[in-house]
Length: 368
Image (cartoon, rainbow, N blue to C red):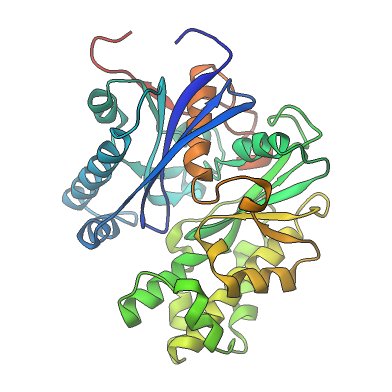
């Protein structure tokens, strides 16, 4: 790729909620946002979601991993092939196990296969280098959040909160130009978000999630569950820090004796309480919290967040961003940074010793 001002990049993300694949086009020079393009979504069918679930965890077995990888690769190829010209693709893959304390992070899906299908370079395996150098390997969207904060011309520190299966928070000081510079960013997983809620709703009702917070709105938060969750060791750790989706799976057991509504209300309150606890780690209070991910569509969760935080809590749409596509856009942005040899993570985002560029580049056969 020749160096020029604007690169048209296509990014894809399949997150811990296991709902499907998001894809989005941006234009960037690897530092600034120069434009936004088309977006798309491809849901996982129930059998596909089941195949991915079977591959979660530290030892799913070769057959389960291969079956899940085929689902992920097929879904991405189907969605990404619908897009027009893009000079590079950023492919996150699907995280099936994340244990940075043991130096392990697993994202299934082969970028070389996508490079052949799409006939363009694919940047993938974004996390391994960071983990190998002592970082958490997550979260990886913070450099993009920094670019977004400068794009919207924020003048004071603010926070981006992604509420997917796991919650993660990025504190940004937009006055610092370089996202890799000391003090520009602090990022970490706050704790459980939608994953325990989705898993409980699926097990009890067969639905994929608590649509519009309808169940939570009917329930009461049970005494003691939030306090027991916040007493866990994870919340005492100083960020940066990150979680596997399954880390708080046992919260379902803590609400087992409750009605559906009370159980979901309690798990929703757990997600909000984890965020409120996390904001206390920010270097300075954020002027506002901009929320992305599926959780921003849950009015009960958003109300709980507003009640627990001392600043405005807003969906990112209020500043002109797309909360459904922010992570897909992030991997388009990171792909361009990898192509240009720029860092994709730093001590403040993953705890890595020094700013590092992750990702490997796969090109179609015969392309240099």
